[in-house]
Amino acid sequence: MVQVIEYKTTVTDKNIIEIPKEYQKYLTGNNKSVRIMILIDDIVDEDALWSKVSTEQFIQGYSESDSIYDKL
Image (cartoon, rainbow, N blue to C red; front, top):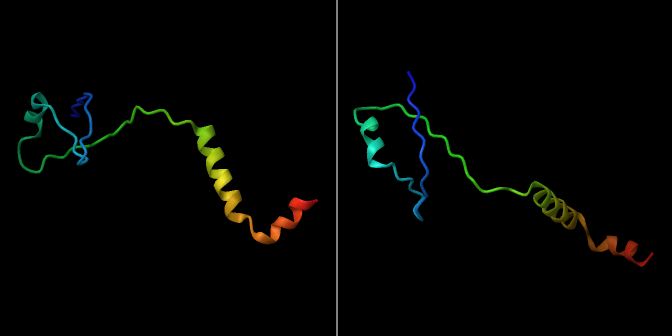
């Protein structure tokens, strides 16, 4: 049997996730097996991310010898 507990919390500056007291009773006992799932609510702008990575990769591949093409 699987018990599912869902709640919202914040991560402290020490990367600690607090478990509310009402759920701690489920964690008592020796060698409790648990599964942790972390879902982050931040939205990632994938187009902006791809653009940034593409630009960085392009610049890394650009060398001084390529400057001859800038004069054409």
